[in-house]
Image (cartoon, rainbow, N blue to C red; front, side, top):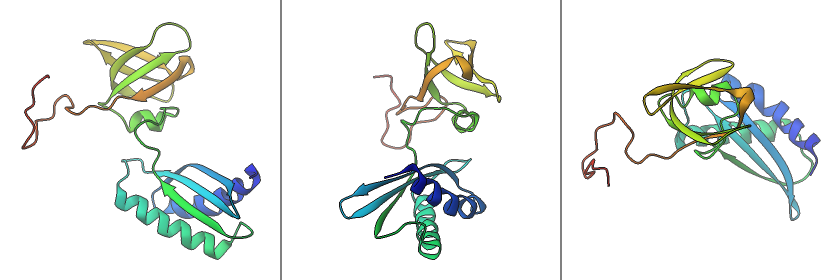
Length: 164
């Protein structure tokens, strides 16, 4: 389906979801059989929970029912971007302060470090105890690494806390 339909849906949703504290990361509208599939990715500056996604879904459904930017039937899917979403904007980096990130630069070898500082131009990561700057203009791709035992966090009951 056209990007025009996605733009209409985004224009209808963004002001209302933004007022509720959500950031609309992406809107995709495509044909799925006889219906349209409307996929909306939302996030919050402080991170997002399953309850937040449910709230955003109810809000989006109400807005789309009232505004009706699409012709015909549609299925609405609201979700969060997920942990594997690339870090492409300063707010994505800010949200991941303290997390382990793998950076693939436009030139040179991939490297991994923990996000220590974030600015509008780049981030400073701790790489094996030394600071290293990732200028956003020089980053081809950056993704958060899933850690089952994050540094500085005590193991919960049932976790051994070992380095196996």
